[in-house]
Image (cartoon, rainbow, N blue to C red; front, side, top):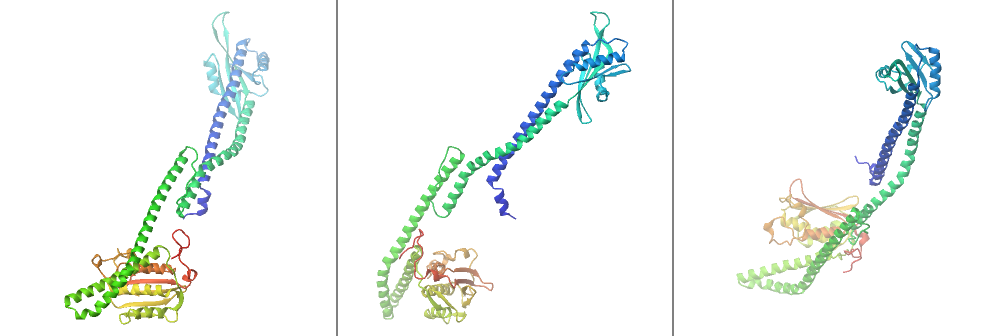
Length: 496
């Protein structure tokens, strides 16, 4: 299930800002981590190098008297501890089983076995950082060398000096670095939010303009264009949109012009044909009256001419009606009528009473255009009689807000492939009927008349066989359009 609020909360703007902040946070954390590591190493190495070098010098100057006198040695260790760098040491001496310390607390607890082994094997000594009880210490081991004879080779005397230096000050400095990095990260992210919002706005401004332009074009304003700014990808997108919009506007305008020319041509041709057709119909009527006194071949030709002339006249009238619909100048001249009586007049006027059954709800009054309602019913019934099979039934029933007219025949029905096209102009489901009496405009005119009333018309196959056409005309549909023409193609009021 799609949640509208979630889509709004995590739109492109929000995602851009979050991505910007994420990059800033990762950069800040990475920089802080690398800085912390390098600073920590530098602080510890500096303290370590200073302490090791200083303690080595003290160990090289120390010349103990052997056998080792613990008390004298302790005072010597006090003297060494007094010159400790960079922090005070606790100095510890080991000689065999003798253990001497310069501090009140024994410092041997932080001396590891590994450091002791390294001190005995390396004449240069060894050092190690140790954490004990949560405190960090630097431990240094230096073997004291002696010469058996003056100027001879130095050899281990067996005495090892150890220095234990607390790293509390260095740990305090390192903690201060961590605190500074942490305290600077949040303000840094807050500061980064400003360019993030600015960047998101600059990126999304063309997108919003494109959305508004697309919405405007979807509403019919094909002259909409986007301002091109800069030379980046968004500027290329704006130029592409403008070029596409210009081509679309040109194509649509060409189609409109072609449609206008086609409608004008059909309207002009229909108007020009009405006068000669009126004369032809008058002549054919006279010829029909005298056809009985002519020889059979001539009479058959006269009746054929009369019939085709009548079809041509009907086609011209249908074309003129369609041209009025296309030009949006078709008018509704409404009146309040009895729906059942209107249906009966339509059937009676065309002498269909004996061929068409009716189920008409009495007393239903509706405001509509009587002439156009007559065309709706006549076209549907005539279509059922020509292309369906009798019996044909017209059913009239009111609903809460609409009048429903149903016309059903009992023929073979409408093919599934033809159902979507039955209201198309000049469409005929059966190619063999291309020369039939119908022009293919009757159902299209019916649909336009229904739409003019604000209603709907549908076609389907009835469950028991045959085609079923259903018209729904709202009771309040045409009232708001009574006595005025429909809007023209450009949204202005059109006139006939």
